[in-house]
Image 1 (cartoon, one colour):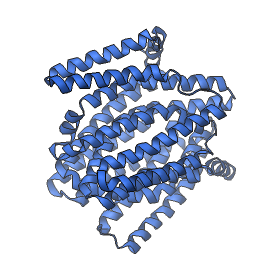
Image 2 (cartoon, rainbow, N blue to C red):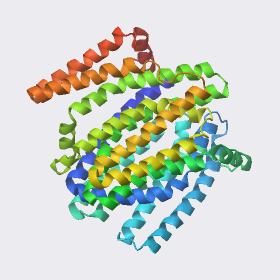
Image 3 (cartoon, rainbow, N blue to C red):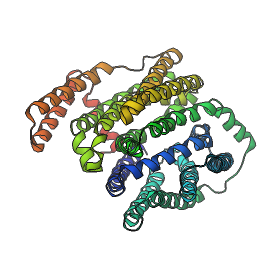
Image 4 (tube, rainbow, N blue to C red):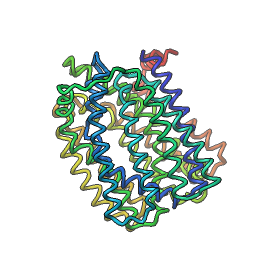
Length: 470
């Protein structure tokens, strides 16, 4: 039931966010930007290699499992395909380490490879629940795994404050994740392998053979470029800011768990009107619910960084601010990005991702030496804007509807109110209590403007209550 799922989702996201917040905070304050930067570099390096461990099979699994009557058969076929890719990626990673004369200790590098394999295999199991629109199992397992990492973090901070000690905290999370995921796997027994279904997975995934690695290349190559020109601490500022903004990405990505399977169902029914209305509603609700969060984070960006990461990370404030803008742009595109995948209009995205990758790498190479982590974020934003606009054009030309309906009315009041409030804060330098009151008043004015413009109606409030069963 969507109402129960929504409530479970909100609760699990809230608990997960609290645990992740403390984990990030303790990591930053106990280990510092340099160690965080070293691990971020290694994770990006292995992430680049393990980009070839998916190749779009996860998308295919969600698509075919959403309306399957034999989930065990789907999952068994999916895990067989994924295991082959995990094994190949592991061999490549080990080969790279042996041939590259890496400065990283072999034990730390091996630990990160184990982390990649265990977490990705676990995700391959848990993604089945996403296809079935069941939020509780996967969220509960991930929540428990985060608790294991938090406990390991506090333990390692007392006995081994080093790259290896910090890396072991990731392994603790991965171990918990795989143990509980394998336990959940028993729900779908007996597992099977179906060659015909495997062929369908491969056929569906063919365009992703380039799309998925290209997206990973864009994300991870920028960290590698940043480390080439800047010290590990600058990578630490980038990584910590990315994780801090990642809280919001996690929340709205969780909302999308309901979105992709639903669009797939509409596509199976050849109901283009339902796809259009559903996409427009998802866009409007995402902006309505999350824009105030971005406004608050912008106003309190210095307080957020100082409270969460500590004084050693004050240079990360501009990085965090740039990430806020980038993630907000990503959120605007998110529903329509999902529509392209769900309606099998994803083949042109190979070219989109390739062009975005080239732009990101070029911009990162040019900006990182002079602007450090901020330049790296700007390179990402350039790529995100390029791919986002391209996605919207594809929506309009292939599905024949205008994607950004009501976009000006939803965003212009927010931008004006955000800048006006920031000007007031810069001029008067109010105490934190007054700043909170001013921010709350501004949010109320924002929602009032949406009611005046009829972008939010009483019907929307009733719908939200029905979703949450309030």
